[in-house]
Image 1 (cartoon, rainbow, N blue to C red):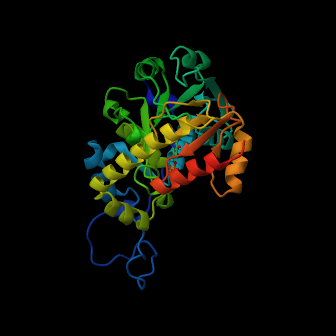
Image 2: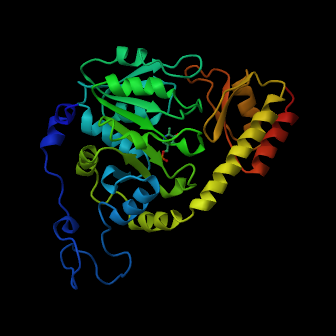
Length: 344
Ligand SMILES: *Cc1c(COP(=O)(O)O)cnc(C)c1O
């Protein structure tokens, strides 16, 4: 892989913004270089633009070097940046699985980059043959999502490997739900695949969706490109400090995951007993995709009773399906009780 040939020329050639904190790093007694207000101690100083303290801690947990980590305002930020780094608007294109997470296409559309969809098979899995078939010499990125949203399943590892081995561009694997899955992360394969970018987030298993922190893992060369194009202070100090504390809750997080997986099993069994359930798809995430036939009708009746699920009826291959997030034991029971009480 030749990184320079893949990157947009303007991005490769540009000089990134250099902040006061880029130009002077280290200890000093008087800081008069960033036009900060010295009178509001604690939040008056610009935060570390590269969030090193937080990255060191994440690096330790993920068993990876901090230079291979990018942190952004949710996963949404690296999704947008990876397109802006590699795809020339109106010239380059992206290939992605279908159905999948909606933000890939939204970011492609905003950036005026062609977005090509490859339908998953009936098991919601990939065929490594079909994906490169849709790619051409203008395809810079392939987006995979494993476990996939809204289908819930991990993508076949062997097929994914074939894509990583044969595609000349960047392969993005979104692992937002990996903590709920029995398989290990692709992060450990980064040295083997210099064209791999892995996305993870604090929004799901860490229970921090409101805090907005997403992670991208890739080679130091690719991470440097992310850092080049991002807003200088893209992760504020409140988020940096708060997540630093949350990272100490490793044991609690493990318990949360176990609880949610138990809740998932409960929902699976309870949903299977309902007369209108046609199919419950296998899931490796904290949600279930359920085929109910009249998804619109059931969605509406549930909403009228204050129980909101995600109607995926109009999504490719998901006609008649609802996507149900695993809640607390009480919320799960309320859902099942409400479904039982519907006169259908
Ligand atoms: C929820 C989700 C995310 C998380 O996005 P954030 O911006 O980090 O909250 C990323 N990818 C997928 C597939 C998701 O379902």
